[in-house]
Amino acid sequence: MLRSLALATAIAFGAVIAAPAFARADAVAPAAAQQAPVAVVQTIADQLATAIEGHRDELKKNQEKLISVIDEVFLPHFDIDYASILVLGQHAREASPAQRERFARAFYNSITHRYAEGLLNYTRGRVKVLPFKGDLNDKRTVVRTQVVLDDGKLVSVDYAFRKGRNGDWKAYDVIIEGISYVTNYRNQVDAEIRKVGIEQLISNIESQGSKALDTMAKDNKDKS
Image (cartoon, rainbow, N blue to C red; front, side, top):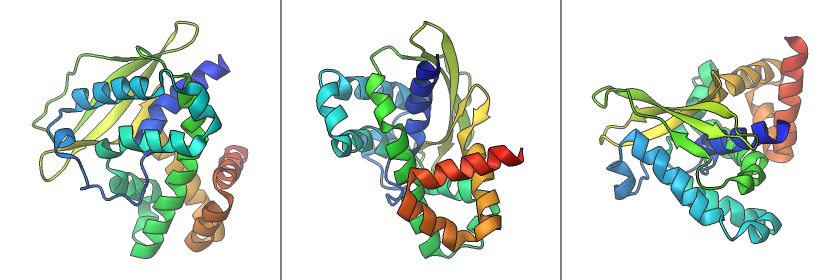
């Protein structure tokens, strides 16, 4: 069961954070800009299955190639700049532009490497996109999906989307069983910045990668 939940987390959260954080939010392919939110999610699910099927052994031995595959599939569809600001929360105003860029690059690079291997277990049909009930005239909306676990159980996974100035839709958060990962990491980042300061936090993530995230998560859990 734990392995299955890890798969659901990798599939869902990987979608939001997999693209390099230094990529600009407005750097979107024309085809992606024309897609509605539901089509974006379905496109990602289909392209991910195509990219992984028949290549699992090769990708398992070469994580950097796996990361590049994830970049190609997810990059055009996510508002990385906006997601990064949400994770920093109130500290985004305190940080310099250079610090915000360094934080985004280091943080999302660490998260990408943490969840990449879990995506190797993804197969076509794992994600069921539910009928869309939102309003495309709104600036924000949610696409609801279900991830099929190894035991056949379903996990609810919602993708929060935001409409850009050009009318293109990009995801910026994922909510698994009601838990927002942006909110989850924002709480951890906030606690760590209050403890060591934003510059030290950035340095820790740059030098320690996912180990720094594990430490933040542990400290946050111990205090709760």
